[in-house]
Length: 517
Image (cartoon, rainbow, N blue to C red; front, side):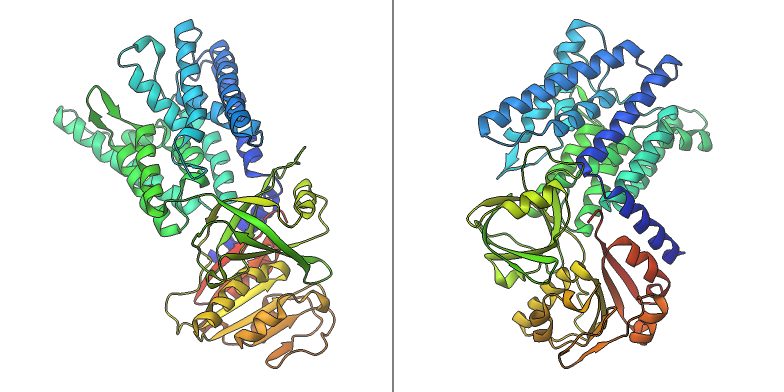
């Protein structure tokens, strides 16, 4: 069952990975807005059709103009997609209206939400979810000016539950946040069920368990909050265990809102507290990298070496997100994720590698960056790290450029004098595509090469598995003790899907799928 899920999810990831996260979120929210408009005409959701349209336009203008002003003042790249995403989330969280004072409230929420990206920030990274910030401020202000409106979370409707769930799961598969958000959903719904049951029993009413379960599952804002707000990468901590802690905190607070004075600690305030917990985990900071040099590792693989302007921490095997602003970006956007090829001990030197030949606007812009130019790292994430127990046997499976996280891990082991029982299965399209040979040789681990042609001058401890395309049976022949090893696989989703039957026999499986490369 696990093998089937791994193969299926990696194929889906390969398809949706061709679109940038910004655009995938924007298209998903746009589709939800259209569905809500149709349901509004049918009378199945609270807002009226004209209220939805006018409120959407007002929110979009408020967010876009605020972002534009801030970006011009700070000389930052224009990000219209970010403005539209914030506006769309606010549309589902706030109460759409046609009343002038209510529209003024929407403007206030939009301005505060967008301004928070720049004012409530730490070294270039915003701390709080912008939409939650705007909704919370409007709700607080509404204590003294109730006509301005407040958060309503009308998206928590049975008719909206199915599209929110389907599109939300699609996004969560893309960001690998599905387990974290499922944890949030379970905690929030469990706590909400207990709270509702206690309230009913205190009032002397009988508890209809199925009805209450349906209510908290499909008539609450939990689905939308988890999929489209809690999952925002910029306000989540980098490690999976930390993300689970945040999910539990937000789920508990959202499921049992606490009264704070004249307002209730509801959904958006619960998320803001979770954002603060995430921030305290790591005190994240944007890092600027200066391009030092570039070199060709193979006919198609290029390496970039940077100098980090400030210290930052990462674990071997993690990846960074690199922002390369450029004109007319294509559907993949201006940000891309790269596994870090250097070890923490190499800092302030930072290395990444990428496969050239792509016609994407991003790759062209990255290739045009000259030595001395600076680029921004918007975050470091990932749990693709070796077992904490140094005696645990490991199998590393790398396809092409997927070798980069293993290079970081092997360099770290060499720098710290550690020895591990590790085997590397290195899959390449040709023998001339074996990158980072010196780094791998220095680690001393055995390597099995899968390539259509036989490599010449293989180092000691390296063997060629033959010209056949790597599959589950071939991997088992090359690594007969796979069942005793923890398997780590880095490469395109199609490779992970092809090897899933063999990898299911490993003691554990950790994947690092490259989507959209």
